[in-house]
Amino acid sequence: MSSRSATREPLRRVAVTGGTHGNEMSGVHLVRHWLRAPGELQRPSFAALPVLANPAAAATCRRYLGCDLNRAFTSAFLTAQATPDDPYEVTRARELNQLLGPKGSTEAFDLILDLHNTTANVGTCLIAESQQEVFIMHLCHHLQLQNPELACRVCLYKRPGEESFHVGSAAQNSLGLELGPQPQGVLRADDLARMRTVVASALDFVELFNRGTAFPAFEMDAYRYLDGVDFPRTAEGELAGTVHPQLQDCDFEPLRPGAPIFQMFSGEDVFYQGDSTVYPIFINEAAYYEKGVAFIQTEKISFSVPALP
Figure 1 (cartoon, rainbow, N blue to C red):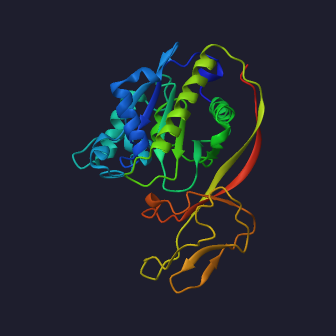
Figure 2: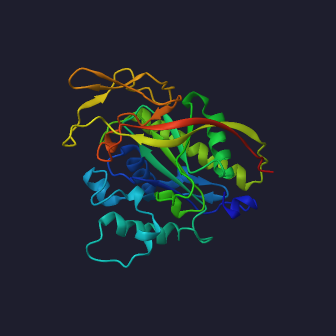
Figure 3: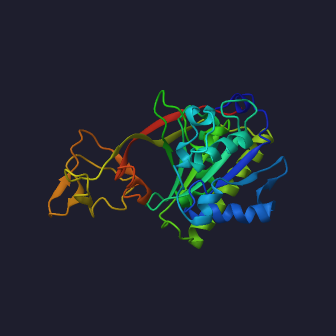
């Protein structure tokens, strides 16, 4: 939680970013719409700024041109001397850091909502850094209470000591909205409407916060990242199998030792060899093939979130 939200100062500078990945179409087209008609993003105490994060990738309907923009907000990239050989996304990260940051400063935007789609069956997934972000945990809880039909699950991705590297890290507070399943380069009306609803609920929460509304303490369940699991591969690095039918589309469901996770092209099954139950997410995500990730293992945790008085 930032110092601003810890002292209950109103959040005036809020941004909604879409198209961080140029082929995730709900965010791309919502932001394009809001740039033309921003009224939906206005509340009595603030007006959120719509930002098309990666316009060049969105123009070509590609995830990125040179490198992943959502991995480019590291100190090494943001502070390095610019060169003509820099990937487009590194240059764009520096531009966004000037617009929405600077990262790590009190001059940065108060909040970024970053909009994403996934090909995985995660439903409505709220991506936060850690459970220590009290303001963001209250925001997630509000989204769960206001949209019970969406089963908004909270994922905590940041490992201890790890530097934040995503677009939202330019701001003092951030939340990623990950909606799926939706194919890359495809715009589904139901997913677009769902994302629109969640964004509206998030902005309503900020308005309540700015009015001084008291938010009581509560208990929260969340899924904390452990590690990624690669596909089975040949000695040459080619795929030797794929996600098992019994695991496919089972995001957030318990994976117990001995359960099948892969089906080899030769016909054999590969079983989960871990010692404890985990909860896989982003199963068979199309964008993660290049990263060598078939799914991400998480652990389910419960914790107390203190009140925002």
